[in-house]
Amino acid sequence: MAQLTLDNVTKTFQDDDGEIIAVDNVSVDIEDGEFLCVVGPSGCGKSTTLRMIAGLEDITSGEIRLGGQIINDQPPARRNVAMVFQSYALYPHMTVRENMAFGLEESTDMPDSEIDQRVEEATKMLGIFDLIDRKPGELSGGQQQRVALGRAIVRDPEVFLMDEPLANLDAKLKAEMRTELQHLQEDLDVTTVYVTHDQTEAMTMSDRIAILNDGILQQCATPLECYHEPNNLFVAGFIGEPSMNFFPTTREGTTLRADRFEYELGDETAAAVSETTNVTLGIRPEDIELADSTAAVNTFEAVVDVVEPRGNENTAHLQFDADADEQFTMTVDGMTSLKSGQRISVAFPEEAIHLFDTGSGEAIRNRTLDEIETVESVV
Image (tube, rainbow, N blue to C red; front, top):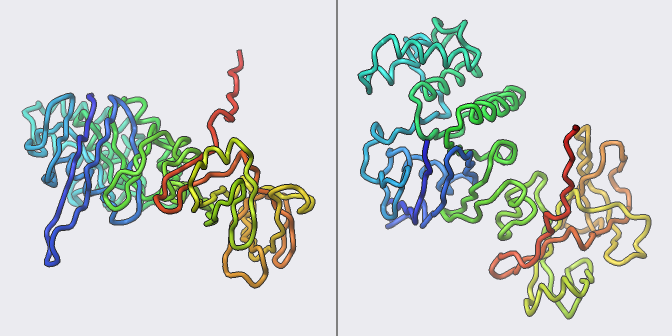
């Protein structure tokens, strides 16, 4: 096990139109035993970054260090990393045992007895020991994924690299495998870089999340920090489902003027905005509150357009005016009934709002994590 460092790593490709920057000066330190998820939209550079760590892509500039040693020019076989692919990449004519042993047989001088021992220990850990003599075609998707994980585990690598390994599983199995992967990573204590486009996986599994957009690292922080203290508009909009609501406004003194409403800022919040004139107000759907009337400050009338029941909660799509095209989203308790066409009053609590510089997208003011309650352990 070792620390993995990406230091100003850049990857460019050439095509008929010129140079394409796939990854742009990405720097991140991944601690020994840390679980880092890399997320972002399609084409943002996630898989390219993973492939550079694995040695499957040459880097254009920068350094990749494993345990303090530069590995830029080392071939994949010498990097002591193990990769798990979305497609599982199992040999269909081989049994589970043979699939898991193949890499060790080809790349090491390890005796057969030790290889067999490693394979059997890994299959027992993954709960597939009774399938060890079956071929991939006789296994379910979840079982095949466990074999792919086992093939990586037997190598005893310093780093696990996982490229959307759960993407082909159904929703229920995916949730089960997320939990199993967390337990497995904690038991093995191996540095793990996990690429996904699924923010639920990133939020629930990782120690930290690295968020990429257009090849540029937007933020690298804990899941809660990314959710409650986003660096910019992109991170705020990308993390969270339903996503954060955004309202472009113009500041006049302590008042934010939007197309459909005016928002009054307290003195402390107004001071944080400073001289910024064009301000985007953001608020997450679950932070919008139902109000008794529009008499209170920062309380507004809205019309319910569509309600999406989700069991434990309802997601309501609202408009400030029934004829307006612009919508925003509110999440309420599942036992709270709202109907399409209903007029309601909603409040935007000041402690829950986020403010961004509309021009640069940078965060001016976020809600604070100091409000998080810690539950004491039972003695």
